[in-house]
Length: 210
Image (cartoon, rainbow, N blue to C red; front, side, top):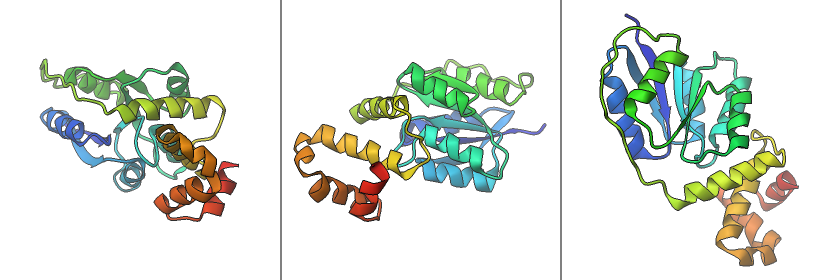
């Protein structure tokens, strides 16, 4: 019996370990790759061509929505994508579905619930099902809540997730939230700090955001 090839993408390493262990214990599926950010995720799709991608929506650098947009542009079969999120913003959920997400699961969830939906989206609802009440509860950092809110706002105003300005704008909002005084030194401090983080120049950051 051919196993369902699954990739897991989440910046919570504890969660990734738990999911990998549970999925590999199933008779009809296997984890062929894991990633902890959006860029690694895109590399997995390019190299491994999974059947199902379990993808967190809020991640550093490239978030789940941007990953979906970039996967649509790749010359590779797009996997069935199950999005994971700790926060249920309706506009973000709608955008993810428009970009090709197959299903949304709100954290925390039961492991068997996820496994059943992996089978469902891959079209393999029959076969071996290992019953278990295994579930997980991991502490989501406060920054996740902030990142989710920022992502929701940016998508609400219509900034495409695949452009550089989206990435820089999200970083800028987060930095200003943590240090409001940065508003008084946008060109002298804020843009250069963002540029340093993403190995570019302050002028390019400014052009991308504007």
